[in-house]
Image (tube, rainbow, N blue to C red):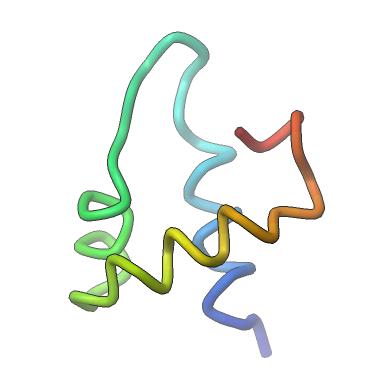
Length: 52
């Protein structure tokens, strides 16, 4: 089972280069209002810089 962070990373992989997104947009796509959780996942991103 994928964790919340894994789902967020998977969404970020789909963002084309040069496109800007927000934690809110990612959370909304995941069906939650946990914007800060998305931010924490990105803070601890083990896939950077491949996944921004």
